[in-house]
Length: 307
Figure 1 (cartoon, helix red, strand yellow):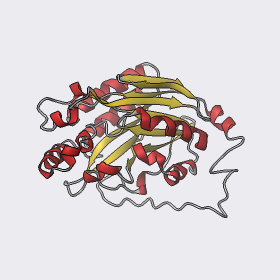
Figure 2 (figure 1 turned 120 degrees about the horizontal axis):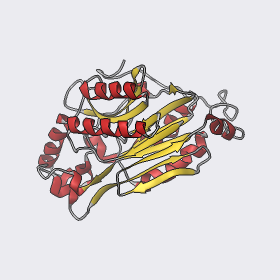
Figure 3 (figure 1 turned 180 degrees about the vertical axis):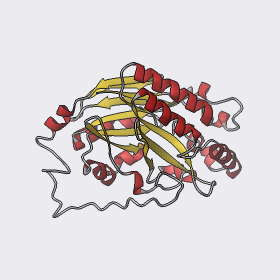
Figure 4 (figure 1 turned 120 degrees about the vertical axis):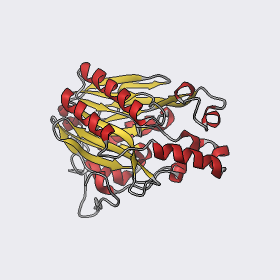
């Protein structure tokens, strides 16, 4: 099966325009033969880059400006944006993972969510990032275990985590234990974060890893955005990408690519996954469930996501 990792910038904080861009990228990747297409973390509609600027995070008034803009760019899991992407995935016959900023029931917070979209069954899962990382906790809510599940597509079983969740051993094992063959890792973009862990997951889980990273340059941030000056000060690239595809065992077979938009492609085979489990199957013959056991709470804590 041919797979694709999308490395692209969103139309910053514009859900409608970013959705249109996503639809074009879906069609382009499908046109090249990809049957599994992965987008970066919160591709709709961008990462809150101002949270990495000390002069902003220490200023409540600036934080409020960013918070309002971010809330206004969030979408519903069952809203028109994700629905249209699901419709296009159906037309193209592809499975897609779409990172998006999801509205909460309160309307005053957001989740970093990742939709799993089956071409025939539509949205089959929405995973909300379990624990936002560092400054992200100023704006993203804690997710839950509802989306810690794998999904069947073709002969493969697919699982996915957002950004630094990929560094959580128990979150990874929750997917390995369900027979994961292909691990989806989505990121806002930075090679120094994605490279080692992408290869490690491939070695640890004996799975393919598709790391799809975002990219953000100064030209991607509208001049009208009130916090633009703080974000772009002294640099041309805010997020540099770092997308790659890794085969079971840890060999990088596509990428990494930095500083540019691209689509990475690779052909994957189930036999390669099976062969690499000869010496190590972390949830099978190399496990000891009588000694070490993982319990996962998959209850959906806060609607109105996919139930």
